[in-house]
Each structure stands twice: as structure tokens, then as C-alpha cells.
Image (cartoon, rainbow, N blue to C red; front, side, top):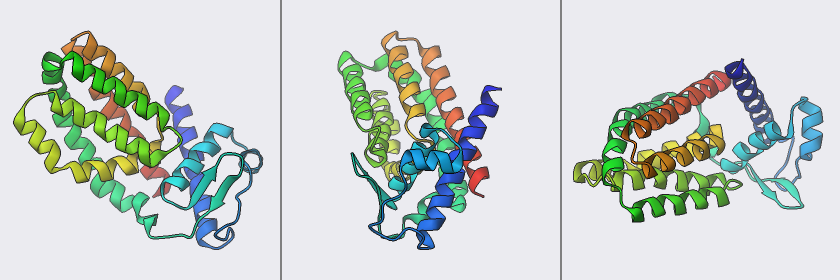
Length: 230
């Protein structure tokens, strides 16, 4: 039942995102126009504020709107960022990067668990605090999220793993932009907190388990989103 509820929520916010995106591109909402309030959108689509807010965050992540405190969501000039969330890119870039991470990061975090210093733990906690600060700015949140995994690679203290992370950093960043645009911030915050706690306890098995669950949940979420928009 829990998975069914998550699927329904994912389907609803993807539907609202796609409907509003299509209206913006069709000119129903001109650049400079203000979108209906969250309450009005809730009434229109028959959903909760959380679902509407998630759809609006996705629109902001691809620069179709800008949301201002006290002013609401203002429509921007549509640009070329439409491609960011296209099904073909999700299938050809995001999923392969996540599969790569599943193979590499589950093993890498065992090394990190053995080798990370107190300074490294503090660096992860500082990064987590920055993620919390940027939950309303998906572009910044994606940067913070990607940096979290780079810190994990850094404290593996394995030069080959660190170099590999640097070599594919552009692909990691690009895929993270799309992942956060699709799934929002909640999943990253949940699992990153659990990973930090497992690293503090120096529990290699728990670190590997949580990292695997984190990446599997992300892959499942992206595949669900892909089905919604395809």
C-alpha cells in the first residue's frame, strides 16, 4: 500500500508539472504572468499543497517559472531547458549513471567507513546543513547533493576512485540536476542523514546497505517518473 501511495503521488505531481509546462509553452501563461496560487491549483487539480509545490519546484528547476516569497510564481520566457527532463535523456543518461553509482558507491563507502576522519564527518555534516538551507532552491540543492557523494569518494582515500569521480563529474552533476528536478529533496535528505549516522558508528555493513537502498530507491523513483512522462 505504501508503494501504491508513492506511485499515486508521483503520478499526480508529474501530471500537474506536464499540464502547466504545456500551458506555458502554448502561451496560456505569458512571460511575466503570475500563475494561480497554490490553493487555486490545489482546487483545480484536487491535490494537496505538497503535490502542487513539488510540481512548481520542477517548473522552477527548468527555468519556466520563478517563485518569490509573498508574490507567488511568475512565468519566465521559455528557453531550451525543456530537454532536461525528456524521456530519452532519462533513459540514456540518468539511469546508466545511477547504475554506475550502484556498482561503485556501495563498495566505495565501505572504504570510506574505514578511513574517514572526524574532519570528514564534519565536512559531511556541513554539507547536509547546506542541503537543508537550499530545499527551496533545487539547482543549489542538486549541487550540494552531488558534493555529498564527492566527499564520500574523497574520504575513500583511494586515488583511483577519487580520479574516476573527477573524470565523470560533469555527468554526475548533469544527472543530479535531473534527478532532483524529478524527485525533489526529500529522498536525498533522508538517506544522507542515515549515511552520516552509519559512518559515525563505523558500521561498514550498514553503510553499504543504506547506500544501496538510497540508490535503488532513486532508480525506482526515476523509472516511475519516466513512465509518467513517456
